[in-house]
Length: 552
Image 1 (cartoon, one colour):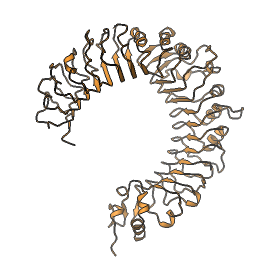
Image 2: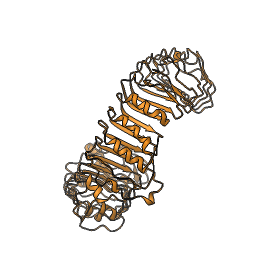
Image 3: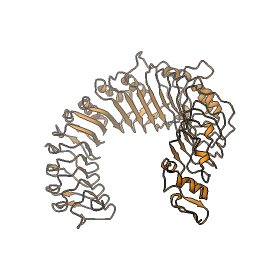
Image 4: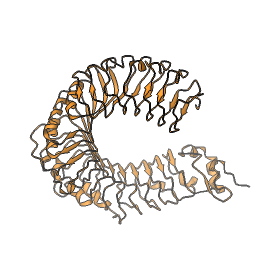
């Protein structure tokens, strides 16, 4: 309620506001000019659970500032002017679960443990650009965390063993100098499940070699974010990562590859433990000179999922595609794949066998233009069930007959500038999304279809039930039709959900009588009643259909 919540962000406050309800539980004072916390500022708010003080000017905090806040669960003191931390601040906060101390000016956590009275702590962020040293055992009293984030890009002193007191850290984020990175990794190899390394300089093979410390670790997911790489360092990393025992997932996020893909040959014969790889927003300055990745041709892989998004991928050589014999999920969205490149990538016409176990394929936001060709190039996939080719441009004429994988059940061709749908659409589909096109009719027989998404088009009437005998869910919101009748809906024997919001409803006597007298229909309408509004006649315009009544 409003008595439990107080949002006072960005109000140029220099002091804590007075007169707040004593029962307040949420207090947001972020982005103000508060410069101190006295012993009386928070004394009255014993029920306070969330206190947000980030981005202020706080330089001093009294020893007893939080003594009355034993119910506090979330404390954010990030981006202030604190030059030191005191044990007394946290002494009474036994309920604290979230603590953020990043972005201040303290240089160490000190030699005495600060957090021994925080048994409930689960999310902890600390460090800043001025943070220089981690002394021995500063985290005594904390054993299990969901998140530990260390921001210390200028760290120059790390006492070995300082992080070894943790028994379990679900997700650890590390942003430190290269000199300290591998010492820290050595201390957490038996506690961290998901390891995220940020802003590392991995430009030489030697700089990557230390990642072998993770070979015996319990880490299951490894993320590299904003990391600098080269051809040779990538090759070295592949060799190291192939020896990992427990790492199942590898994420490469917003990294830079200073190279052209001209690496030497990868030398190993057995696939490693990694099953899931995701590469997102990879910057390649010399993209125009990039090679065909021939060093990967003989790479033994048993990955089941590969995501490569926003990386300017336009072609995968056929031999590379064939090497991914276990791959079930492939996401190449937001890239530069065009029709002919798709043909080569799927080895069409040269024996096929590209990604032979593939079940889900995402090619949305690429440069595909011929829907029939896309179907043809994928037609040899024996297990493909789900295909997303939305946000391409299929405005050109669609052929009346197309070939598709016989197993395809889910197709997304939304936002593709399609003006007309015909029998090119595979009859095996159970789910079809053609939203956000310019369709004025939908007259395609799809005998197995269960879900149809056709919102944001120009339809003036419902599709024919005879063409969609097993339809369960229909989304036809934001089109151009002005109502529906019993004759149109009754043949949809299996229809359970109808989203027909935001259309131009003509509230005629027959339409209103049908809606008002058939509660089962209004019961299955998504967004009923607020999103169903009369457009005509003029006397009814703006009135919800549920409340509309024409004079007798």
